[in-house]
Image: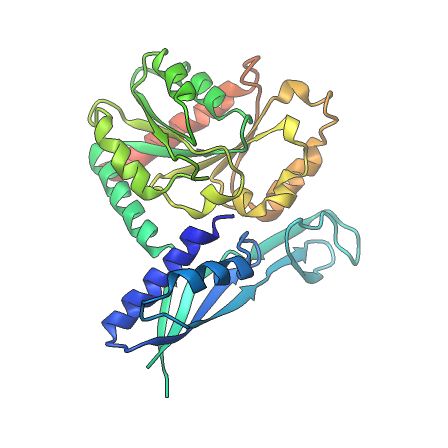
Length: 114
Length: 224
């Protein structure tokens, strides 16, 4: 939904890091984005290819690691990955007592430079 | 041959840093700041009106209104005699820390100790853009249906407190309150839920009492 400011954020973090390390160019950017975030990877790539022109990040490849959110059933302890819309019941025992954790990561993990 | 540089920085790092500056401004001014987030029409402005009319004299509120366009909400708040600033994003779907920083000089800092920021009506984006506020208040409405915590877990997980407005319509909408509560608890174990109707007044006092306690606790911590 707001992939443009997100892409600008990624670019800024990557360029700041590259400049601090005296890089000539950025070849790859590794991102960790949780499954609960509403970011569409293709849209980010689309904006990124437009915004990175004439910067140190021109031509850089984006890598998305989508961390899942994990639901735990408080009845039978079964664990399973979830993405929105979230399940209301455990697929194994049918209990409605679920706990969801994780999937909220939103950071630039590393960049590769030359 | 490439070199890998570890970064581990929030993607919206620039906004996070500005939010931290805002948080310092609030602390120095002795202000508890709330970020009110909800879908359009759920009751953000109604909650502000219902809350501010019930606060004791010691708690002096001010409001920042966020909308794509128009001053409709700010005008309503101003008519109540409260200090208010309207931010028009011109199409942006959420407020960010920079907008809050730009709005603050237009408020009489030093004359209020509670700030209610009404974010743009949106159940998705605002959760990702920190403002420097202290509490995320997510306002759901019965008219939206009881499945919203399941569909918008990011927003409900980010809440420090959840208000469910329009409780007077529970029967009309066949709203399953238990289903809604389970969805909320599933993604957020700590946020209390206040079921209310701003229109009839039912349930509002309990929320205002909670807010008063939060306000007292905030300032006890800064006094230590």
